Amino acid sequence: MKTSIYTVLRQIRVFFISYLCILLPCLIIKLLFTKSQIYFTVNSWHFDFGDVFFAWYTHMGDGLTCVIITLLLLLFNYRWGFLMGTSYAVTSILAQVLKFMFDAPRPIIYFKDQVSRMYLVKGVEMLETHSFPSGHSISAFSTAVILTYITPKKSWGILFLGAAFLVAYSRVYLSEHFFEDVTVGSAVGVFVTIFWITWIEGKAFLHSKKWNDGLLPRKRRND
Image 1: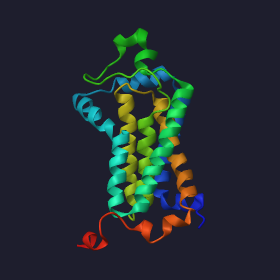
Image 2: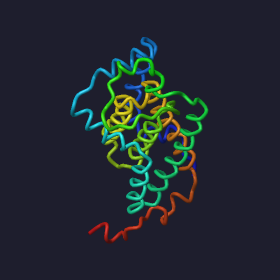
Image 3: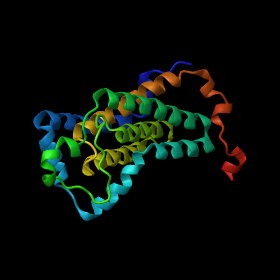
Image 4: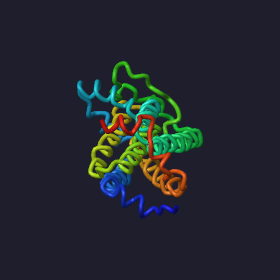
C-alpha cells in the first residue's frame, strides 16, 4: 500500500495551510530583525499570569506528554499509538542530533553580559546549552500533525496548531530558547513528521484489522 505526500497533506490541509500562514511571517521577522532585538522584544512582554501559565504549559512539549498521549491512543487504536510513538521517537532522535551538532548557547549564556536586562521567571531552571533547535517545539508540532492526521474532525487541526504554538512561545517567554530555535523546531516537527507518515503509512501491516483495534475491547468502547 503506497501513501503519497499529497495524500497526507490533504488529510492535514487545514492544519498545514494555517501553519504556513504562521511560518511565513516568522521568516519575515527573522529577516528584518536581529536575534537580540527579537529576544528582548518578546522578553519585555511579561505578566503575572503568563509567568504561571507558561511555566506550567511548557511541559506540554515534554517527552512524557508524548508518551502519555501514545498510551492513550493505544487504548483505542494500535495504529494511532504506533504513529504517535514512532513519530516522537524519530523527531526526538533528530532533535538531539541537531542539538549536539550545533551546540548553541541558550539565552542565559548568550546574553551573560546583559543578564540585568533579562526578565527571568522565578522558579524556572535556566538551561545553558544545546539551544538550537527547540526540542519542545519539535515534539509539540510533531504531535499536532499526528493528532490532526488521525482525527476524523480535521477542523481540530487549528486547535492542535494553537496548542503547539503556545508550547513554542512558552520556550521563548521563559528564556529557554531563541525565536530561531522554536521556528526551526516547529518546521522540523511538521515536515519530518509528514515525511515519516508518508513512509510508514505505506506499510501494509498498519492497515490490517488487528492494528486498527485497541487495548480496550471494541464492545466496551461502544457502550
